[in-house]
Image 1 (cartoon, one colour):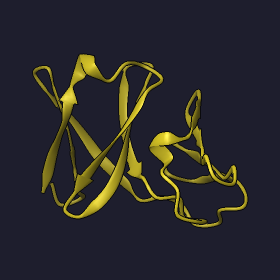
Image 2 (cartoon, rainbow, N blue to C red):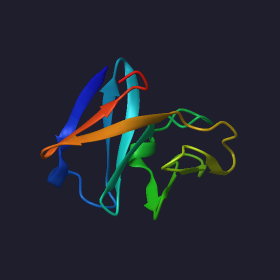
Image 3 (spheres, rainbow, N blue to C red):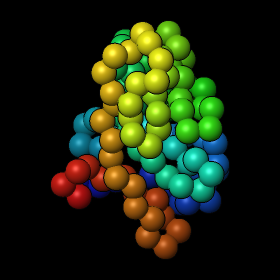
Length: 103
């Protein structure tokens, strides 16, 4: 399963957006021209990571400040203790897609 996110030039470096992939919220980030996707809902408490503060390759949850490494979904700061799932991104022409692990 996959879903179109946007045109590549619509998601500028340092920005994020939220898409729904097969019923699951996914945050898609542009980090210096590379695209990454992780679960959008903070694993600590329900909050949208696509609304969080992006600092280089991490995102801080806007609710309680948990920090996640965007490329890997790993927790970098409490209160979260569980990592975010990671999804593949794919660029085809000028279109950006996110897909589940089965593609």
